[in-house]
Length: 113
Image (cartoon, rainbow, N blue to C red; front, side):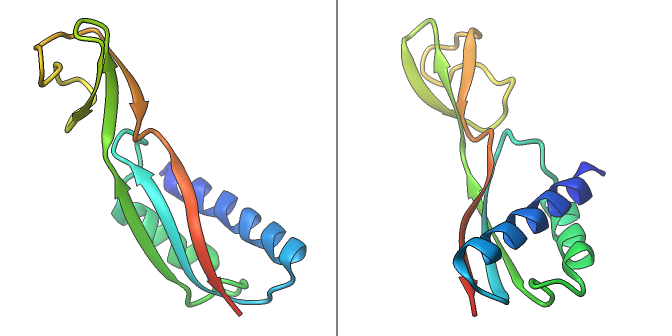
């Protein structure tokens, strides 16, 4: 389950932000999760609760913002929204697509004390 490793990296980022910006408690974490990021959201939620225990984010609310997947179609030269990374272009049916959005997991913002 790589979501646990993602949560451990998230905690490292929170600690670094706390040192840099001088806060001691995180009450809310908003994460933007792309449709093509390969993240199982329920496993991420579980990992978040486990990893944050006893830390500056213990008891913090995790809000997951779903980012749609997009890709550049080489056949119609347009960026299109895709429900599935392997789906054909919804405009022209082309299959030569390069993902260009929805591949990231990012901290959108934090509520801190």
